[in-house]
Image (cartoon, helix red, strand yellow):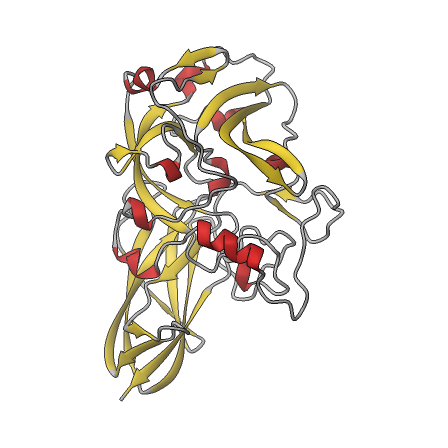
Length: 352
């Protein structure tokens, strides 16, 4: 095995048992749950790199630059609650062709919860002046492409010191569930999910760029195996429709009745606020109505009234942010299947 080499499936290669094992451990948001402003914990998307570690909250300590904090210590600090959308960086990977081999996400690796914790920045007051990266280490441990590791990610010092970066210990007003990072995880609003390190153990400072596997090898956008690529950081604009009508069990094709159909969904972006959402009906784009924004990094609801006519139709949706980024209609292919924000397509049969 070549360390760090990601694999791309052959032209006629089916999803493997290994990929199905990953899919069985990690789950996406059922798209009908887009109706909720705040995603219930059990419906929020979930990605676990290795195992869910067992952590005893009574003995757990977080080491921040050499200082130890218990869970009670963190809860005694000023608390902030923020509604933030999280999306996996690999969302949409399974729809790419040729398919990058990894967790086979379709569209559903997303959720929007209310997270409660304490700001990280005050705990970094003694950060050395020559710090380049702040490194976050989780308790999950395993192998990735032959490299044994604790899960680690780093943030540039300016990002780590943002006032909205939190050490969170509650989700939707309740303690974090084990699978969501109990007792404490990092929250970096606007960034893809790989940055929100779960089961946090330590926070350290480096005066050189962090070169850990999950930073320098994984989570890179690149076309060829031998190039460095660019790191995955903030979430690109994306919108999803809640599927209308009802589904076929196997194909998930939707069925609706002729007449007015209220289409709705959610849109989000980590770079700039969502400014526009368009719904495509058989390739013709219509501007949707956007609800007022709530928190800066929470998704926004949109809706569009479709006068459905009998027959077979394809619905689509795309978002544009306030700085002009728009979802592509064609696939933005890359070797690891990262940050794929291709516009959603949904097959619908309208019954007379």
